[in-house]
Image (cartoon, rainbow, N blue to C red; front, side):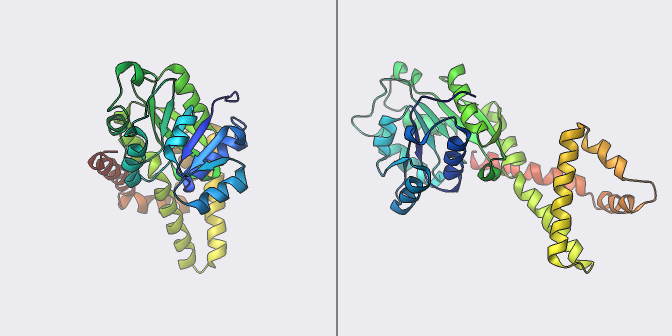
Length: 283
């Protein structure tokens, strides 16, 4: 992963925007001198300037004009206004290549194009690629999983730049946009499923008269260790589960309850429900 010489502009200084900014600087892929941020909240801009040494502005168009790569990290409900501030200006034009990376949930490539391409000719659009990203919250601790999809004007270089930036926060896989609903259901919403399972394990420990702190340590350490086993032994979850499940033992008794309650199918149904809702929302 080489260092980018391009100027990066970040619009939106929320938690996810900050996670991306911190990761980009920490990874060394870019330096604070090459990064500008924009937000309507002066207090957030002051924090970003003090913590990360980046330049700040409250002018979306100024940031857009001065950046080679623009990361849109605003809330979905704010996106229309942000894009209007840029694309509806009389002096809006694309004279050199400019990459847009959107990490805003619920905003399709088509919607981004409708806003940003409305007054551009084909030559300008070809210099103005758009990448849509579905990140997840573990990006906040540099352990994120992102799915990305590129529009028709994105070159191999645009895709590499996007992947390099996203890999600073974790892992990234490129998909066709139609698959981002499944990505949303599995990894976008996935941390909540894991947290739900952890909550339940801790509550079970408490119900067996363990104190809450010990139940939490037992659960979290077991989860971390189990994930490490999968990663380091390179065995399937099923194979590892079978090794733990001795006939007639305690683990088999627990698995029998999970099977009798159709927990596996319920988990599958839950992910499918998230997928369907994602499609309904137009993600």
